[in-house]
Image (cartoon, rainbow, N blue to C red; front, side, top):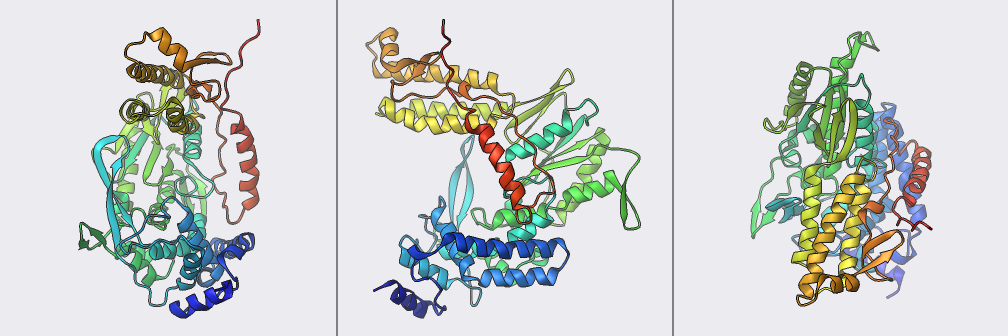
Length: 504
């Protein structure tokens, strides 16, 4: 069967019209992406200009586009969960199944299947698990398709200081923004540490169906599909499915508006249709990453008032703040946010890796080196540990982390020494050292051989992360993001390198 016969045969089964491409391998992805990008730009521009009907029309065009359906299938088959089936046990691994899946996508008669619920360990909390819902491949592709049409709207209407699950933004951008707000002498002295109880699990379906600009019938199918656990079906009457591709966008849409709410109360006052700065500055600013947020304030009373406003805002969406974890903190006492600790020492703000983050990483290294290494060779252990070391260093490389990196290197040296000595209980430490450690560059103690060695975390140089412009939109200003990406790449390219031995 040739490519054309394959598509015609698949179309006859699914009831869909054949696409313009003869086979999955022949798809010109650059043209497909360009076509979808053009429609997304149209959606974003219409949303920005307040032309809602035109935006809805462009959204309908996009979800009906065969190019968008191809992209949706490629998304779910190339990500980490591409080989993980849902309740129907199906995956799309062959070109034939992928093309057939794209032809089968569509809202007509669509009914979502229940999610397959599994429990995964909570990071940094041994023994605790969190539920993860796994949709079927078809449902994942439908979510990816509608996410392509919904994301331009979410980006255009988003709070400028929201950084989680957004294109071109990262946790490092949130950190850089928060540092700029708190570093000056006249900066706010208090922060409200926000903690939302089970955000993804409790968002109101009624609010989402009323306020999210997409096909309501399809959205209802996503939200109310239920889940299967231990052979039993359970109904879902609130929340978005954790593990769903569209869930982060829905959560952002529900939480966007907090910045505007605080701004209208504390920062601006209305004179007709014009907003002007208030004479009394309360130094209220919001920085949000997904459902984690921080609000700065001049006084604890202002922070408490901001908490009440946000509490009422969240209640409309079926959410609430945790009474125990939502705290008002003085900057001199410090607070943790996204794995970093922000604190002023004698008036100087320092951002460091949080104690909890460091402890979690050290426990992970202990588990990998001393519990799960088994009969690994030295080379295999190096291969397993290197990406973990680089990942931790890359995440924290923009803050004051040099001292932390050195401490972790010392702890890991002790762990590796135990690992090596345990393999040779009858040998003295000098023999073990000569077998497993080498001199590299300016380093006397490098675990490895001449060809394979474990990098030291202290080799990571500290590189400040530049702030992103709050109003930047990747669908309307792609050149800005492309230009920003180039210096970021060059900035970080050589930041992780071995010290060179000094010549005498």
